[in-house]
Length: 521
Image 1: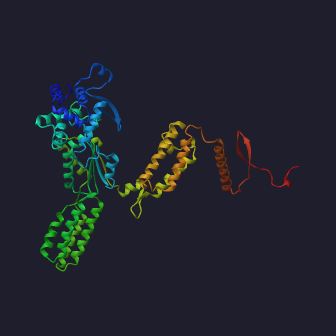
Image 2: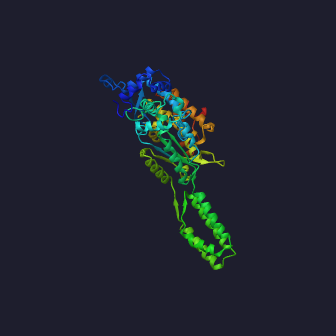
Image 3: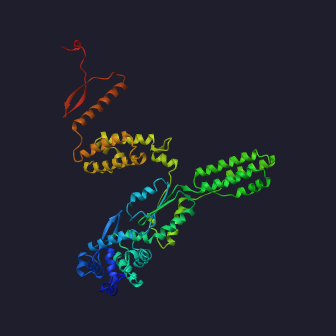
């Protein structure tokens, strides 16, 4: 018998009896014949034979295999053709059960792109991965969730089930068709939707917790076992504005006692700020308070000097505590731990807005309208890079230490060089598209990219560039060197004549006299 089997042989015998309404209701629910359904249930209870084990056949209705997904080998279980068809029908029925709106996998129209689109405009981002999400959902948990979710719908889908015993047996058989070896199989059609039903309460708890974390514009989504939380900014600015508005009202009033108590308690205040902009905002507000005190008619000169001195000392020793993204991440991980789940800490990732220094390093700047673009230095770097890849030969690029390191060229070999150049060109152009947007890329970048790709992709297996082209370049270089030397010596540029030497032309200095009178004959 299978590990954690919820439908043993004696229970299966009850279902297969004539006149039992459970088998009739199951066949209608799964949209298949009774004989086909009994065959699948029997197959789920049959242990694998020695031949099956030896040749890697099916075991309990599933075929196990390993597949590499995102640089990690995962164990997948593919159901047999009959079981898969029944599971697809069950999935359609289970789609009618409402699940959390935060889940973005398993439903019609769901995709990884839709999940990412939800968090596109939020600068702060946390991604978490639930460890062993599918294996951690055992048979008993699936049974309990289906029992709770199919309570009222079962009266419509299976009206023949009158007694509670028959209803329980029906849900046990349904659970038996959807699990494998006491866990939810990764690779079955029903697994995503069952996971969404199981994790309805989990999603609700996180959605309740997020408003307590002092963040605004928050969004939460779960794509299978990947959790994503993003938000625009912390609520600290809103709290600060409320605090300082009350202080301003007190200072604008003519009540001496209230101003005095405020000035006594103000040095002990600690303001929660997120970044430097909020810290500067607090300092500006303190300057405004100094002006209010200076022109206040309710205070004497000595009191004004005393209170302005208090504000000056506080401004120099400004006390601020930052609520960073790490604190929110820790609280979310604690909440997930309380729900009986564990997080894969290696896959925890965070994204925060870039500072001005980081943008300068990455070559990003913003225009008046807030649109991103590359700064002048980065544009000139890309222009030089595209130009070199268009004009220089493999040997010339190999001689340059920068390109030798960039393309990892241990030897001047076209078979190694061309794929590396094409990959680099595509990576550069993708980054430009990410900065400007796919539709707003400058035409010059697109033109350089297309020319460079065309040159490198059209001749992947050819030898070096044309010999004539190389000879012309050598001649140009020699000519320039000669002209430079003569200019430095104060002489006029010399005339050149070319002689055939060694298969190519070399400029030779022409010492013949200009007039015929100077000839010796």
